[in-house]
Image (cartoon, rainbow, N blue to C red):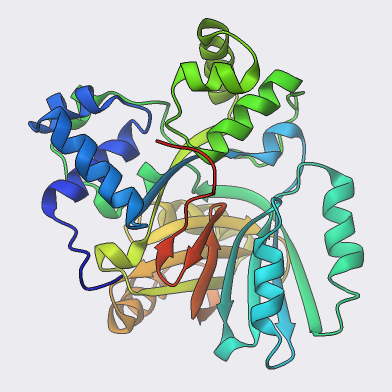
Length: 343
């Protein structure tokens, strides 16, 4: 982030409050935090304008009956930036990162339809001349991820009493099948609500109703149903560098099959881990780690990850550049707001 950006302690408290209740009003956050409503409003808008945070509704394709995939692409030197940018522009590509000295692209595919996914994985990418190798892994079980407030790095920023005052916009993340056995079928109205939330997860019920050609009361009921069935969650994306986390890495773990669940559940409790899932392929657990520097990454992976029972091998792939994270494009280390939507 630019040196002119100084994230203050009250800024971090507001970020944590948003993680707990991302659609809470400025007034209710002010009461919980002991600040004025105008101060919360002003700080939030500055953090958003500076690209530190973004609140957005994220659709889970698993709730719609579709699987999620992780893809590693090995590319010709000099071509990786163009491939990464093209992938990042796709709505069904959730995050994109560059690694391996700029010759590897890692991305998450979250297509809403099977045809869309097969077109990308089976036709478009294999026919791209600059792509030398493709490895695609199906996500089998997610241990942590989704709602941002379960990235535990900010636990303790607020007191239990302050968190209780805020309440919560949903239940804690719980381990569950990644593809729903009883998928939800979206209506045209649902799609319009989800589109508005993707642009701004804090859009008011009045704004959502206008976008969906509906009424605030009806939209409120439908949004509650979509949240309850985990079709969408309101995510608070954070530019990790702004909070001092400058070393990010993909961890590819080969774990004894009998230990996959225990390793995944242990990873979910680690403050450095923002995402962890069991996947198909020779490396059967994937995780994303955020550390303050490479030395902290080394200590974390060698001492706490390396000692896990059942771990057979681990590949640490530092992220050179995040191009997109959780549906949000990045410019350098800043989150980029979409052209539409206000918060």
